[in-house]
Length: 96
Image (cartoon, rainbow, N blue to C red):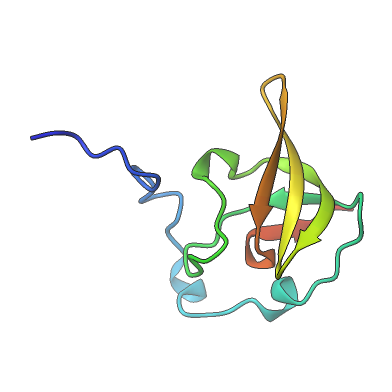
């Protein structure tokens, strides 16, 4: 049988939520207002599938570039390359 190579393959532990956090929406993270140049951490939320960036960017930090609809455009360094990630606010956490 051919091995699956989808975008969410081997994400069982990455996208798992703790027992107390299951079926709970984090409202403060969803309505947080970001400005251009703010530092954010990309932390994937398994309870929200819409606007989820690729799992390779989980735990990375970047800068807000702009807003695109209800999502944010984040500039992230991946190795030596600068990449742009489009993520909804449920998957972002502000850094001070």
